[in-house]
Length: 238
Ligand code: FPP
Image (cartoon, rainbow, N blue to C red; front, side, top):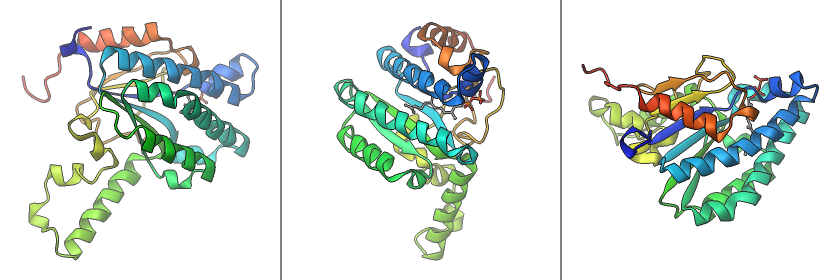
């Protein structure tokens, strides 16, 4: 994998935790526990390889429909991850961002996320982005609302609106030139985008390994990257 064939921004839909657990006779939440260990490994691998941004779909707006017990395990895992990893992330120059309506998360999780983001704000090497209570339609709706409000207040003219205007109002705008996704991976064999980064994936390459997320090793991740490296990206050209 050379620098020119390495995707700058990778997004991952970490799917299959529930199926992994149920097929082994465990409660669903155990799949999330095992899945969280994979998060740690994949983040480290991305940093080692020189990936600039990694966005992980940890919780969608639709996931609020899950039982309270499962939700509470997810918030606990998130807090544990932050507590365990923050010093390592800092040492490695990783900045932490969150996209989504994360004001809906329980207070302790919000507080710890906020504190970690502050601690890691100076990271220059890689952005680690957690999509939490995220939905692409909500993100696009929010951008439209911001633009409409600026037009109402006379700070923006409708004739001036272009793609950059929209892009700079998306939740991913802080990623700057890395906000477009280069490579989208969804584990577990499902081939859907499920309301994830719809605008940012306009020219992304996709990979759908059958492996369930708790079984998704660094070796398998590298194989996905090799497949990506072998593709020709034309961005609509010839
Ligand atoms: C999808 O699997 C996965 C999730 C909804 C949660 C992903 C969360 C983690 C991997 C752990 C969180 C930890 C950190 C550090 C962010 P699913 O439950 O929908 O699987 P299924 O389709 O087999 O039911």
